[in-house]
Amino acid sequence: MNTNGKRVIEIKALSYYYGDHRAVEGVSLDIHRNEVLALIGPSGCGKSTLIKAINRISEVSNEVRVEGDVLLDGKSVYTPDVDVTALRRRVGMVFQKPNPFPKTIYDNVAFGLRLLGQGEQEIEERVEESLRAAALWEEVKDRLKKSAMGISGGQQQRLCIARTLAVQPEVILMDEPCSALDPIATQKIEDLKHDFTIVIVTHNMQQAARVSDRTAFMWLGKLIEVDATKKMFTKPDEKMTEDYITGRFG
Image (cartoon, rainbow, N blue to C red; front, side):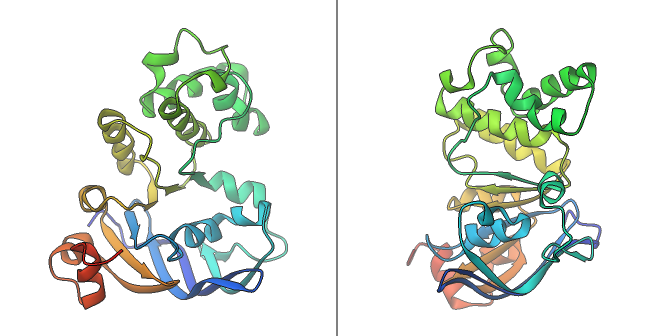
């Protein structure tokens, strides 16, 4: 397993509510540095809510309530003194649907770097580096000053991945990031596992089996089982996990 044993994220008895609706119930889960953890389960089981709870992104547009806690390097992300902007820099997020800013391709990737006060030389280098890592550089290098809204959906998704990579987060949360990507781009994105701690929500069992060190199965807001991916896909402890993986439901 690709971990060094150090816990970078600790989710402790987390229950997460949107208004009166409880989307996640009593989940406890550790995520180790430089591992890839796949979250699987049927639509609506709480996978996306769980990862959004880690960097508090759901609070941007929802009334939420949290019981339990999430720790990043041993410190709660829910204390009143937490700088949420700094948290989201350390824990980046890539959504299922691309959300580029209505700016140029270059300015999208440079956006976070400018907020951090980076110099233009450093920004220029990081923009190219990030676009290459997201398998987009060769397609857009001659139109960096064009609007990001004019490229395809798959390219926009890779642009959003590049924007996340540019600020060099410690952890990347991915909510079905490859649903709009072709196989070659998907492979390139999967290669990011060598450099980051990644939590990936996916409905693609082959992708989960291929890229993750561990897999966690969720059902109706609860964590049913988490284990080494090879074991989960060959001999899970819970029958419900086996039924889901083999396509009997979900």
